[in-house]
Image 1: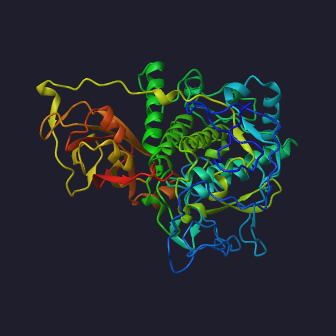
Image 2: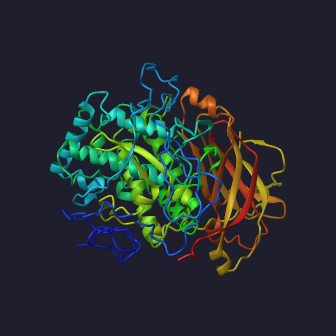
Length: 584
Protein backbone atom coordinates (compact mmCIF):
# COMPACT_ATOMS: atom_id res chain seq x y z
CA UNK A 1 0.00 0.00 0.00
CA UNK A 2 1.37 3.40 -0.94
CA UNK A 3 0.10 6.79 0.14
CA UNK A 4 0.46 10.16 -1.47
CA UNK A 5 2.07 12.39 1.18
CA UNK A 6 3.72 15.47 -0.15
CA UNK A 7 5.77 16.72 2.76
CA UNK A 8 9.47 15.79 2.44
CA UNK A 9 10.05 16.35 6.13
CA UNK A 10 8.34 14.79 9.17
CA UNK A 11 4.69 14.27 8.35
CA UNK A 12 1.77 15.20 10.54
CA UNK A 13 0.44 11.74 9.70
CA UNK A 14 2.14 8.47 10.67
CA UNK A 15 3.28 7.51 7.15
CA UNK A 16 5.17 9.21 4.35
CA UNK A 17 5.20 8.65 0.62
CA UNK A 18 8.49 8.37 -1.24
CA UNK A 19 7.71 8.24 -4.95
CA UNK A 20 9.27 5.43 -6.92
CA UNK A 21 8.33 7.03 -10.21
CA UNK A 22 7.64 10.58 -11.32
CA UNK A 23 5.18 9.28 -13.90
CA UNK A 24 2.42 8.15 -11.56
CA UNK A 25 0.57 9.36 -8.54
CA UNK A 26 0.39 6.89 -5.64
CA UNK A 27 -2.41 4.43 -5.06
CA UNK A 28 -5.41 4.80 -2.79
CA UNK A 29 -5.69 3.96 0.86
CA UNK A 30 -8.43 3.99 3.44
CA UNK A 31 -9.04 4.53 7.14
CA UNK A 32 -5.51 5.78 7.94
CA UNK A 33 -6.18 8.24 10.72
CA UNK A 34 -4.63 11.63 10.23
CA UNK A 35 -3.61 12.11 13.87
CA UNK A 36 -2.75 15.77 13.73
CA UNK A 37 -1.39 17.90 16.48
CA UNK A 38 -3.51 20.94 15.78
CA UNK A 39 -1.25 23.14 17.84
CA UNK A 40 1.72 22.26 15.66
CA UNK A 41 3.04 25.14 13.57
CA UNK A 42 4.26 23.43 10.42
CA UNK A 43 6.93 25.34 8.58
CA UNK A 44 7.21 25.30 4.81
CA UNK A 45 9.19 22.40 3.38
CA UNK A 46 12.29 24.00 1.98
CA UNK A 47 15.98 24.05 2.65
CA UNK A 48 16.34 27.61 1.39
CA UNK A 49 15.65 30.67 3.52
CA UNK A 50 12.40 32.60 3.52
CA UNK A 51 12.50 35.86 1.60
CA UNK A 52 11.17 38.77 3.66
CA UNK A 53 10.07 42.04 2.13
CA UNK A 54 11.02 44.82 4.55
CA UNK A 55 8.40 47.55 4.76
CA UNK A 56 7.43 50.14 7.28
CA UNK A 57 4.05 48.74 8.21
CA UNK A 58 1.69 45.85 7.66
CA UNK A 59 -1.24 46.60 5.36
CA UNK A 60 -3.59 44.03 6.91
CA UNK A 61 -7.35 44.35 6.78
CA UNK A 62 -9.70 44.26 9.72
CA UNK A 63 -7.05 43.46 12.30
CA UNK A 64 -7.09 39.80 11.27
CA UNK A 65 -3.33 39.46 10.80
CA UNK A 66 -0.64 39.04 13.41
CA UNK A 67 3.08 39.36 12.82
CA UNK A 68 4.93 36.12 12.14
CA UNK A 69 6.95 35.01 15.14
CA UNK A 70 10.66 35.47 14.67
CA UNK A 71 10.42 37.67 11.62
CA UNK A 72 12.65 40.71 11.46
CA UNK A 73 10.25 42.62 9.25
CA UNK A 74 6.66 42.49 8.16
CA UNK A 75 5.41 41.82 4.65
CA UNK A 76 2.34 42.68 2.61
CA UNK A 77 0.35 39.49 2.04
CA UNK A 78 -3.25 39.55 0.85
CA UNK A 79 -5.53 39.72 3.87
CA UNK A 80 -9.27 39.10 4.36
CA UNK A 81 -11.65 42.07 4.21
CA UNK A 82 -12.94 43.71 7.37
CA UNK A 83 -16.07 41.63 7.72
CA UNK A 84 -17.32 43.69 10.68
CA UNK A 85 -18.19 46.49 8.31
CA UNK A 86 -21.35 46.57 6.26
CA UNK A 87 -20.49 46.71 2.58
CA UNK A 88 -17.23 44.82 3.01
CA UNK A 89 -18.33 42.83 -0.01
CA UNK A 90 -19.45 44.70 -3.10
CA UNK A 91 -20.24 42.68 -6.21
CA UNK A 92 -22.22 44.18 -9.08
CA UNK A 93 -25.63 42.54 -9.53
CA UNK A 94 -26.58 44.11 -12.84
CA UNK A 95 -25.90 41.66 -15.65
CA UNK A 96 -26.91 40.33 -19.00
CA UNK A 97 -28.34 37.20 -17.36
CA UNK A 98 -32.06 36.61 -18.04
CA UNK A 99 -32.79 36.46 -14.30
CA UNK A 100 -32.02 39.89 -12.83
CA UNK A 101 -33.35 39.20 -9.33
CA UNK A 102 -31.04 37.97 -6.56
CA UNK A 103 -29.29 35.57 -8.91
CA UNK A 104 -26.03 37.47 -8.92
CA UNK A 105 -25.90 38.79 -5.36
CA UNK A 106 -22.74 36.94 -4.51
CA UNK A 107 -21.83 38.46 -1.16
CA UNK A 108 -22.01 35.88 1.64
CA UNK A 109 -24.16 36.64 4.69
CA UNK A 110 -21.30 36.98 7.17
CA UNK A 111 -20.54 40.67 6.64
CA UNK A 112 -21.67 43.64 8.71
CA UNK A 113 -21.74 41.78 12.03
CA UNK A 114 -19.78 43.87 14.55
CA UNK A 115 -19.37 40.84 16.83
CA UNK A 116 -17.81 38.71 14.12
CA UNK A 117 -14.19 37.74 14.72
CA UNK A 118 -12.91 35.03 12.36
CA UNK A 119 -10.89 32.42 14.23
CA UNK A 120 -7.82 30.45 13.19
CA UNK A 121 -8.91 27.20 11.57
CA UNK A 122 -8.37 24.00 13.54
CA UNK A 123 -7.31 21.35 11.08
CA UNK A 124 -9.26 18.09 11.29
CA UNK A 125 -8.40 14.87 13.08
CA UNK A 126 -10.07 12.43 10.72
CA UNK A 127 -9.29 9.37 8.66
CA UNK A 128 -7.36 10.19 5.53
CA UNK A 129 -9.80 11.08 2.73
CA UNK A 130 -8.88 9.62 -0.67
CA UNK A 131 -9.99 11.47 -3.80
CA UNK A 132 -10.48 9.01 -6.65
CA UNK A 133 -10.81 9.52 -10.42
CA UNK A 134 -14.33 9.77 -11.76
CA UNK A 135 -13.81 6.73 -14.02
CA UNK A 136 -13.42 4.68 -10.84
CA UNK A 137 -16.23 6.09 -8.70
CA UNK A 138 -18.81 5.91 -11.49
CA UNK A 139 -18.88 2.14 -10.97
CA UNK A 140 -18.97 2.36 -7.17
CA UNK A 141 -22.70 2.41 -6.40
CA UNK A 142 -22.19 2.91 -2.64
CA UNK A 143 -19.95 5.92 -3.17
CA UNK A 144 -22.21 7.45 -5.82
CA UNK A 145 -25.21 7.17 -3.52
CA UNK A 146 -23.29 9.01 -0.80
CA UNK A 147 -22.13 11.69 -3.24
CA UNK A 148 -25.58 12.36 -4.63
CA UNK A 149 -27.18 12.27 -1.17
CA UNK A 150 -24.64 14.76 0.20
CA UNK A 151 -25.20 17.19 -2.69
CA UNK A 152 -28.97 16.82 -2.39
CA UNK A 153 -28.81 17.58 1.33
CA UNK A 154 -26.61 20.62 0.69
CA UNK A 155 -29.07 21.93 -1.89
CA UNK A 156 -32.00 21.33 0.49
CA UNK A 157 -30.54 23.43 3.33
CA UNK A 158 -32.30 26.76 4.02
CA UNK A 159 -31.24 29.48 1.59
CA UNK A 160 -29.69 31.50 4.41
CA UNK A 161 -27.62 28.59 5.72
CA UNK A 162 -23.93 29.24 4.93
CA UNK A 163 -23.56 25.55 4.06
CA UNK A 164 -26.34 25.76 1.46
CA UNK A 165 -25.13 24.87 -2.05
CA UNK A 166 -25.83 28.34 -3.48
CA UNK A 167 -24.29 30.08 -0.47
CA UNK A 168 -21.15 28.01 -0.99
CA UNK A 169 -21.06 29.03 -4.64
CA UNK A 170 -21.25 32.68 -3.55
CA UNK A 171 -17.92 32.31 -1.75
CA UNK A 172 -16.31 31.49 -5.08
CA UNK A 173 -18.27 34.23 -6.84
CA UNK A 174 -17.14 36.93 -4.41
CA UNK A 175 -13.47 35.95 -4.21
CA UNK A 176 -13.19 35.37 -7.96
CA UNK A 177 -14.94 38.55 -9.06
CA UNK A 178 -13.04 41.16 -7.04
CA UNK A 179 -15.87 41.78 -4.58
CA UNK A 180 -13.56 42.55 -1.65
CA UNK A 181 -11.44 45.70 -1.71
CA UNK A 182 -8.03 45.55 -0.04
CA UNK A 183 -7.85 47.96 2.86
CA UNK A 184 -10.79 49.86 1.37
CA UNK A 185 -8.94 50.43 -1.92
CA UNK A 186 -11.45 49.66 -4.69
CA UNK A 187 -8.67 49.99 -7.25
CA UNK A 188 -6.89 46.99 -5.73
CA UNK A 189 -9.57 44.37 -5.07
CA UNK A 190 -8.80 40.89 -3.82
CA UNK A 191 -8.70 38.48 -6.74
CA UNK A 192 -7.78 34.80 -6.63
CA UNK A 193 -7.36 34.40 -10.37
CA UNK A 194 -4.33 35.11 -12.56
CA UNK A 195 -1.86 35.09 -9.68
CA UNK A 196 0.03 32.86 -7.25
CA UNK A 197 -3.09 32.74 -5.05
CA UNK A 198 -5.16 30.77 -7.58
CA UNK A 199 -4.09 27.24 -6.61
CA UNK A 200 -3.95 27.52 -2.78
CA UNK A 201 -7.24 29.44 -2.54
CA UNK A 202 -9.08 26.80 -4.55
CA UNK A 203 -7.42 24.06 -2.48
CA UNK A 204 -9.01 25.52 0.63
CA UNK A 205 -12.32 26.08 -1.13
CA UNK A 206 -12.53 22.36 -2.05
CA UNK A 207 -11.41 21.36 1.44
CA UNK A 208 -14.28 23.13 3.17
CA UNK A 209 -16.85 22.14 0.55
CA UNK A 210 -15.78 18.51 0.88
CA UNK A 211 -15.92 18.56 4.67
CA UNK A 212 -19.39 20.10 4.65
CA UNK A 213 -20.60 17.31 2.34
CA UNK A 214 -19.10 14.69 4.65
CA UNK A 215 -20.74 16.24 7.70
CA UNK A 216 -24.16 16.21 6.00
CA UNK A 217 -24.00 12.44 5.54
CA UNK A 218 -22.08 11.71 8.75
CA UNK A 219 -19.02 10.33 6.93
CA UNK A 220 -15.63 11.88 7.74
CA UNK A 221 -13.98 9.72 5.05
CA UNK A 222 -16.03 11.23 2.22
CA UNK A 223 -13.89 12.73 -0.56
CA UNK A 224 -14.73 14.47 -3.81
CA UNK A 225 -13.89 12.69 -7.06
CA UNK A 226 -11.54 14.27 -9.56
CA UNK A 227 -12.06 14.59 -13.31
CA UNK A 228 -8.62 13.65 -14.62
CA UNK A 229 -8.94 15.53 -17.89
CA UNK A 230 -5.16 15.17 -18.38
CA UNK A 231 -5.54 11.43 -19.06
CA UNK A 232 -6.95 10.15 -22.39
CA UNK A 233 -9.31 7.86 -20.45
CA UNK A 234 -10.74 10.91 -18.66
CA UNK A 235 -10.98 13.48 -21.46
CA UNK A 236 -14.77 13.25 -21.73
CA UNK A 237 -17.45 14.52 -19.34
CA UNK A 238 -18.42 11.69 -17.03
CA UNK A 239 -21.93 10.29 -17.15
CA UNK A 240 -22.27 11.00 -13.43
CA UNK A 241 -23.01 14.60 -14.44
CA UNK A 242 -25.28 14.01 -17.44
CA UNK A 243 -28.38 12.43 -15.84
CA UNK A 244 -31.11 15.13 -15.68
CA UNK A 245 -32.63 13.36 -12.66
CA UNK A 246 -29.41 13.52 -10.62
CA UNK A 247 -28.57 16.31 -8.15
CA UNK A 248 -25.18 16.46 -9.93
CA UNK A 249 -26.84 17.67 -13.14
CA UNK A 250 -26.72 21.26 -14.36
CA UNK A 251 -28.99 22.63 -17.08
CA UNK A 252 -26.56 25.32 -18.28
CA UNK A 253 -23.94 23.35 -20.16
CA UNK A 254 -22.92 22.85 -23.76
CA UNK A 255 -24.65 19.50 -24.24
CA UNK A 256 -22.97 19.05 -27.62
CA UNK A 257 -19.85 18.36 -25.54
CA UNK A 258 -21.38 15.40 -23.74
CA UNK A 259 -19.69 12.01 -24.27
CA UNK A 260 -18.01 10.90 -26.43
CA UNK A 261 -16.76 14.44 -27.17
CA UNK A 262 -13.09 15.01 -26.22
CA UNK A 263 -12.25 18.11 -24.16
CA UNK A 264 -10.25 20.76 -26.03
CA UNK A 265 -7.60 22.75 -24.12
CA UNK A 266 -7.59 25.28 -26.99
CA UNK A 267 -11.36 25.68 -27.23
CA UNK A 268 -12.47 28.90 -28.93
CA UNK A 269 -16.29 28.48 -28.88
CA UNK A 270 -15.97 26.58 -32.15
CA UNK A 271 -15.36 22.84 -32.30
CA UNK A 272 -12.19 22.31 -34.30
CA UNK A 273 -12.12 19.69 -37.03
CA UNK A 274 -9.62 17.33 -35.44
CA UNK A 275 -9.78 13.60 -34.95
CA UNK A 276 -10.06 12.40 -31.36
CA UNK A 277 -6.49 11.08 -31.52
CA UNK A 278 -5.16 14.41 -32.79
CA UNK A 279 -7.03 16.35 -30.11
CA UNK A 280 -5.79 14.04 -27.37
CA UNK A 281 -2.23 14.42 -28.66
CA UNK A 282 -2.55 18.24 -28.61
CA UNK A 283 -3.91 18.20 -25.06
CA UNK A 284 -1.10 15.96 -23.82
CA UNK A 285 1.57 18.09 -25.50
CA UNK A 286 0.08 21.26 -23.95
CA UNK A 287 0.08 19.73 -20.47
CA UNK A 288 3.65 18.50 -20.92
CA UNK A 289 4.81 21.97 -21.99
CA UNK A 290 3.04 23.51 -18.99
CA UNK A 291 4.96 21.29 -16.58
CA UNK A 292 8.30 21.45 -18.40
CA UNK A 293 8.37 25.26 -18.49
CA UNK A 294 6.79 25.65 -15.05
CA UNK A 295 8.86 23.27 -12.93
CA UNK A 296 11.93 25.56 -12.75
CA UNK A 297 9.81 28.76 -12.80
CA UNK A 298 6.75 28.50 -10.51
CA UNK A 299 5.29 31.81 -11.71
CA UNK A 300 4.81 30.26 -15.16
CA UNK A 301 2.91 27.31 -13.67
CA UNK A 302 1.05 29.02 -10.81
CA UNK A 303 0.81 32.70 -11.73
CA UNK A 304 2.58 35.92 -10.82
CA UNK A 305 3.02 37.34 -7.30
CA UNK A 306 0.15 39.47 -6.02
CA UNK A 307 0.71 41.51 -2.88
CA UNK A 308 -1.53 43.66 -0.75
CA UNK A 309 -2.94 46.73 -2.51
CA UNK A 310 -1.51 45.74 -5.88
CA UNK A 311 -3.75 45.77 -8.93
CA UNK A 312 -4.63 42.13 -9.77
CA UNK A 313 -5.00 42.91 -13.48
CA UNK A 314 -1.23 43.43 -13.78
CA UNK A 315 -0.32 39.83 -12.99
CA UNK A 316 0.10 36.98 -15.44
CA UNK A 317 -1.82 33.70 -14.97
CA UNK A 318 0.01 30.40 -14.86
CA UNK A 319 -0.58 28.14 -17.87
CA UNK A 320 -2.31 25.51 -15.70
CA UNK A 321 -4.93 28.15 -14.92
CA UNK A 322 -5.19 28.98 -18.63
CA UNK A 323 -5.98 25.33 -19.44
CA UNK A 324 -8.51 25.38 -16.61
CA UNK A 325 -10.12 28.51 -18.12
CA UNK A 326 -10.56 26.73 -21.45
CA UNK A 327 -12.22 23.76 -19.73
CA UNK A 328 -14.64 26.14 -18.00
CA UNK A 329 -15.60 27.56 -21.38
CA UNK A 330 -15.79 24.14 -23.03
CA UNK A 331 -18.21 22.83 -20.38
CA UNK A 332 -20.36 25.95 -19.95
CA UNK A 333 -22.96 27.48 -22.24
CA UNK A 334 -21.48 28.32 -25.62
CA UNK A 335 -23.70 31.36 -26.12
CA UNK A 336 -24.29 34.48 -24.05
CA UNK A 337 -24.69 34.66 -21.09
CA UNK A 338 -22.44 31.57 -20.66
CA UNK A 339 -24.12 30.63 -17.38
CA UNK A 340 -22.63 28.42 -14.70
CA UNK A 341 -19.29 26.87 -15.78
CA UNK A 342 -18.97 29.41 -18.59
CA UNK A 343 -18.35 32.36 -16.25
CA UNK A 344 -16.71 32.65 -12.83
CA UNK A 345 -19.77 34.41 -11.41
CA UNK A 346 -21.80 31.20 -11.44
CA UNK A 347 -19.22 28.47 -12.09
CA UNK A 348 -19.51 26.86 -8.65
CA UNK A 349 -23.24 26.24 -9.20
CA UNK A 350 -22.33 23.28 -11.39
CA UNK A 351 -21.14 20.16 -9.55
CA UNK A 352 -18.69 19.44 -12.37
CA UNK A 353 -16.76 22.50 -11.15
CA UNK A 354 -15.57 20.54 -8.11
CA UNK A 355 -14.37 17.62 -10.23
CA UNK A 356 -12.41 20.01 -12.47
CA UNK A 357 -10.80 21.77 -9.53
CA UNK A 358 -10.02 18.54 -7.70
CA UNK A 359 -7.93 17.58 -10.72
CA UNK A 360 -6.33 21.02 -10.91
CA UNK A 361 -5.39 20.56 -7.26
CA UNK A 362 -4.11 17.05 -7.97
CA UNK A 363 -1.92 18.42 -10.76
CA UNK A 364 -0.50 20.99 -8.35
CA UNK A 365 0.24 18.14 -5.90
CA UNK A 366 1.99 16.26 -8.69
CA UNK A 367 3.92 19.39 -9.62
CA UNK A 368 5.07 19.83 -6.01
CA UNK A 369 6.15 16.19 -5.77
CA UNK A 370 8.20 16.47 -8.97
CA UNK A 371 9.95 19.51 -7.50
CA UNK A 372 10.82 17.66 -4.30
CA UNK A 373 8.07 19.59 -2.47
CA UNK A 374 10.23 22.66 -2.11
CA UNK A 375 8.24 25.82 -1.56
CA UNK A 376 7.34 27.52 -4.81
CA UNK A 377 7.67 31.07 -3.47
CA UNK A 378 9.85 31.60 -0.39
CA UNK A 379 8.09 34.86 0.23
CA UNK A 380 6.02 35.83 3.26
CA UNK A 381 3.67 37.76 0.98
CA UNK A 382 2.61 34.39 -0.43
CA UNK A 383 2.98 32.15 2.60
CA UNK A 384 1.07 34.49 4.92
CA UNK A 385 -1.73 35.37 2.47
CA UNK A 386 -4.94 34.73 4.41
CA UNK A 387 -8.52 33.92 3.43
CA UNK A 388 -11.80 33.36 5.24
CA UNK A 389 -14.24 30.47 4.76
CA UNK A 390 -17.11 28.75 6.52
CA UNK A 391 -16.21 25.41 8.09
CA UNK A 392 -18.67 22.54 8.50
CA UNK A 393 -19.75 23.95 11.88
CA UNK A 394 -20.75 27.21 10.17
CA UNK A 395 -17.95 29.15 11.82
CA UNK A 396 -16.04 31.78 9.87
CA UNK A 397 -12.42 30.70 9.96
CA UNK A 398 -9.21 32.11 8.53
CA UNK A 399 -6.49 30.10 6.84
CA UNK A 400 -3.02 30.80 5.47
CA UNK A 401 -1.42 29.56 2.27
CA UNK A 402 1.53 28.18 4.25
CA UNK A 403 -0.80 25.68 5.93
CA UNK A 404 -2.09 24.37 2.59
CA UNK A 405 1.23 23.11 1.26
CA UNK A 406 1.15 19.85 3.23
CA UNK A 407 -2.07 18.07 2.22
CA UNK A 408 -1.57 15.51 4.99
CA UNK A 409 -2.29 18.35 7.42
CA UNK A 410 -5.62 18.75 5.61
CA UNK A 411 -6.14 14.96 5.79
CA UNK A 412 -6.65 14.11 2.15
CA UNK A 413 -4.72 12.49 -0.66
CA UNK A 414 -5.22 11.34 -4.26
CA UNK A 415 -5.62 7.85 -5.65
CA UNK A 416 -3.01 6.77 -8.16
CA UNK A 417 -3.29 8.04 -11.71
CA UNK A 418 -0.74 8.00 -14.50
CA UNK A 419 0.61 11.06 -16.28
CA UNK A 420 0.85 10.02 -19.95
CA UNK A 421 1.49 13.61 -21.03
CA UNK A 422 5.03 13.45 -19.60
CA UNK A 423 6.19 11.67 -22.74
CA UNK A 424 4.06 13.65 -25.19
CA UNK A 425 6.86 15.20 -27.26
CA UNK A 426 5.46 17.25 -30.17
CA UNK A 427 6.21 16.00 -33.66
CA UNK A 428 8.78 17.93 -35.68
CA UNK A 429 7.24 20.23 -38.27
CA UNK A 430 8.50 20.56 -41.79
CA UNK A 431 9.54 24.15 -42.36
CA UNK A 432 8.06 25.92 -45.37
CA UNK A 433 10.70 26.55 -48.04
CA UNK A 434 8.84 27.83 -51.09
CA UNK A 435 9.24 31.56 -51.88
CA UNK A 436 5.50 32.13 -51.66
CA UNK A 437 5.30 30.84 -48.10
CA UNK A 438 7.29 33.62 -46.41
CA UNK A 439 6.24 37.14 -45.46
CA UNK A 440 7.92 40.33 -44.28
CA UNK A 441 8.18 40.63 -40.48
CA UNK A 442 9.24 43.61 -38.34
CA UNK A 443 9.86 44.40 -34.69
CA UNK A 444 6.78 45.26 -32.64
CA UNK A 445 7.50 48.98 -32.41
CA UNK A 446 6.08 51.54 -29.99
CA UNK A 447 2.49 51.63 -31.25
CA UNK A 448 -0.30 49.59 -29.69
CA UNK A 449 -1.59 46.90 -32.04
CA UNK A 450 -5.15 45.69 -32.48
CA UNK A 451 -5.37 41.93 -32.54
CA UNK A 452 -8.12 41.77 -35.17
CA UNK A 453 -6.04 39.33 -37.23
CA UNK A 454 -2.90 37.25 -36.62
CA UNK A 455 0.23 39.34 -36.20
CA UNK A 456 3.84 38.23 -36.53
CA UNK A 457 6.65 40.23 -34.95
CA UNK A 458 10.41 39.86 -34.80
CA UNK A 459 11.67 39.74 -31.21
CA UNK A 460 15.35 39.91 -30.26
CA UNK A 461 16.54 37.34 -27.74
CA UNK A 462 18.70 38.34 -24.74
CA UNK A 463 21.25 35.69 -25.72
CA UNK A 464 21.45 32.95 -28.32
CA UNK A 465 22.96 29.45 -28.09
CA UNK A 466 22.89 29.25 -24.31
CA UNK A 467 24.72 26.42 -22.54
CA UNK A 468 22.96 23.76 -20.48
CA UNK A 469 24.05 25.37 -17.20
CA UNK A 470 22.85 28.78 -18.39
CA UNK A 471 19.44 27.30 -19.20
CA UNK A 472 19.25 25.69 -15.78
CA UNK A 473 20.11 28.99 -14.15
CA UNK A 474 17.71 31.18 -16.14
CA UNK A 475 14.56 30.44 -18.09
CA UNK A 476 13.74 32.29 -21.30
CA UNK A 477 10.32 33.92 -21.00
CA UNK A 478 8.19 35.71 -23.57
CA UNK A 479 6.20 38.71 -22.30
CA UNK A 480 3.07 40.06 -24.00
CA UNK A 481 2.16 43.14 -21.98
CA UNK A 482 -0.46 45.86 -21.78
CA UNK A 483 -3.18 43.53 -23.03
CA UNK A 484 -6.56 45.28 -23.16
CA UNK A 485 -9.81 43.41 -23.74
CA UNK A 486 -11.80 46.30 -25.17
CA UNK A 487 -15.28 45.20 -24.09
CA UNK A 488 -14.04 43.70 -20.82
CA UNK A 489 -15.66 40.38 -21.55
CA UNK A 490 -14.18 37.21 -23.07
CA UNK A 491 -10.98 36.85 -25.08
CA UNK A 492 -8.47 34.31 -26.28
CA UNK A 493 -5.31 34.36 -28.32
CA UNK A 494 -2.68 31.67 -28.90
CA UNK A 495 1.07 32.25 -29.15
CA UNK A 496 3.63 30.50 -31.35
CA UNK A 497 7.35 30.97 -32.00
CA UNK A 498 9.53 30.18 -34.98
CA UNK A 499 12.94 31.03 -36.37
CA UNK A 500 13.01 33.56 -39.22
CA UNK A 501 12.80 31.87 -42.63
CA UNK A 502 15.31 34.49 -43.84
CA UNK A 503 16.52 37.85 -42.48
CA UNK A 504 13.39 39.90 -41.79
CA UNK A 505 11.14 37.16 -43.20
CA UNK A 506 8.72 34.80 -41.46
CA UNK A 507 7.36 31.46 -42.58
CA UNK A 508 3.61 31.28 -43.03
CA UNK A 509 3.69 28.31 -40.65
CA UNK A 510 3.51 29.68 -37.11
CA UNK A 511 5.99 27.16 -35.68
CA UNK A 512 5.88 25.93 -32.07
CA UNK A 513 2.86 26.56 -29.82
CA UNK A 514 4.03 28.04 -26.49
CA UNK A 515 0.88 29.14 -24.65
CA UNK A 516 -2.40 31.02 -24.59
CA UNK A 517 -4.20 33.94 -23.01
CA UNK A 518 -7.79 33.11 -22.03
CA UNK A 519 -10.26 35.43 -20.32
CA UNK A 520 -13.69 34.14 -19.33
CA UNK A 521 -16.82 36.21 -19.99
CA UNK A 522 -17.88 38.65 -17.31
CA UNK A 523 -21.23 40.14 -16.43
CA UNK A 524 -21.99 43.50 -17.99
CA UNK A 525 -21.19 45.73 -15.03
CA UNK A 526 -18.02 43.83 -14.10
CA UNK A 527 -16.96 43.93 -17.75
CA UNK A 528 -17.50 47.69 -17.85
CA UNK A 529 -15.25 48.11 -14.82
CA UNK A 530 -12.46 46.00 -16.32
CA UNK A 531 -12.53 47.02 -19.98
CA UNK A 532 -9.59 49.48 -19.67
CA UNK A 533 -7.41 47.30 -17.44
CA UNK A 534 -4.03 46.39 -18.87
CA UNK A 535 -3.15 42.75 -18.44
CA UNK A 536 -0.03 40.61 -18.82
CA UNK A 537 0.87 37.21 -20.26
CA UNK A 538 4.17 35.41 -19.63
CA UNK A 539 4.99 32.09 -21.30
CA UNK A 540 8.14 30.00 -21.13
CA UNK A 541 9.84 29.33 -24.44
CA UNK A 542 13.00 27.44 -23.45
CA UNK A 543 11.69 23.99 -24.38
CA UNK A 544 10.11 25.24 -27.62
CA UNK A 545 13.43 26.74 -28.67
CA UNK A 546 15.10 23.38 -28.08
CA UNK A 547 12.44 21.27 -29.76
CA UNK A 548 12.10 23.62 -32.71
CA UNK A 549 15.88 23.87 -33.06
CA UNK A 550 15.78 27.67 -32.88
CA UNK A 551 18.43 28.13 -30.21
CA UNK A 552 21.03 29.62 -32.52
CA UNK A 553 18.63 32.36 -33.70
CA UNK A 554 19.43 35.91 -32.54
CA UNK A 555 15.77 36.84 -32.97
CA UNK A 556 12.60 34.77 -33.20
CA UNK A 557 9.29 35.30 -34.93
CA UNK A 558 6.41 35.51 -32.45
CA UNK A 559 2.96 34.84 -33.93
CA UNK A 560 -0.04 35.99 -31.91
CA UNK A 561 -3.24 34.45 -33.23
CA UNK A 562 -6.62 35.85 -32.04
CA UNK A 563 -9.44 33.35 -31.48
CA UNK A 564 -12.21 35.53 -30.03
CA UNK A 565 -12.70 38.84 -28.27
CA UNK A 566 -11.69 42.42 -28.99
CA UNK A 567 -8.04 42.64 -27.93
CA UNK A 568 -5.09 44.99 -28.32
CA UNK A 569 -1.53 44.60 -27.03
CA UNK A 570 1.15 47.13 -26.11
CA UNK A 571 4.48 45.31 -26.36
CA UNK A 572 6.22 41.98 -26.92
CA UNK A 573 9.69 41.17 -25.53
CA UNK A 574 11.80 38.38 -24.02
CA UNK A 575 13.54 38.26 -20.63
CA UNK A 576 15.74 35.76 -18.83
CA UNK A 577 14.32 34.89 -15.39
CA UNK A 578 16.26 33.25 -12.59
CA UNK A 579 15.04 29.69 -11.91
CA UNK A 580 14.94 27.98 -8.52
CA UNK A 581 16.40 24.63 -9.66
CA UNK A 582 19.59 25.25 -7.69
CA UNK A 583 17.81 26.32 -4.50
CA UNK A 584 17.42 22.81 -3.07
